[in-house]
Image 1 (tube, rainbow, N blue to C red):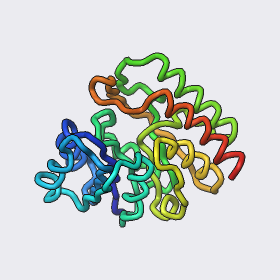
Image 2 (tube, rainbow, N blue to C red):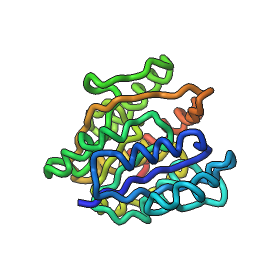
Image 3 (cartoon, helix red, strand yellow):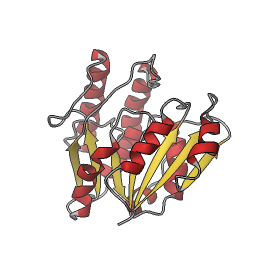
Image 4 (cartoon, rainbow, N blue to C red):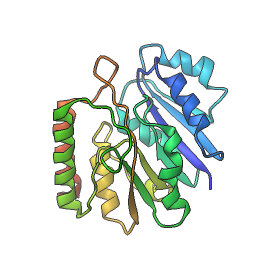
Length: 229
């Protein structure tokens, strides 16, 4: 089965080279790498044009920054693989764990797989207490409406059979993509698995972008896509 790796990218000049190298080394040979540059202004576009274009399948560009969800919509629409995996452009998530994420689908046990930073004994960088509290709260509220027992709703690593994610109308342009997709997946008959993953989080000084405003918007999206859709 062919794997499409979708990499939304915004101002990641310092990490995109290493990330793409890691994805190319990931233990799955039949894969296409699709990078979507979401209006970067720090020189990322130059790196993509000059260095990454020869070694990945596609690079797509947004003229202006629209948000992670918008970049993912562009990448998902362009994907041709049987399986679609979402990979952030930073180095917080390890592509060497693709095998664990893909196995439930390859063994025909799952249709959707979420990686969980809080499941199992994988390495996990110790950082922000209130981020952990917020993540747990949002996951709890989401689970109450979806009747799923996820441990990490906000995880980057989400893997889908292509027909499932391409068959969904994605509305959120920003980080609201996460609760929207979880809500919409929960309303299907998909078999959903969770797999423990490692997590090498960044500080804000190192480039982390999500903030408290995104948390409030995620809460709004939980209600929006579970109650009013």
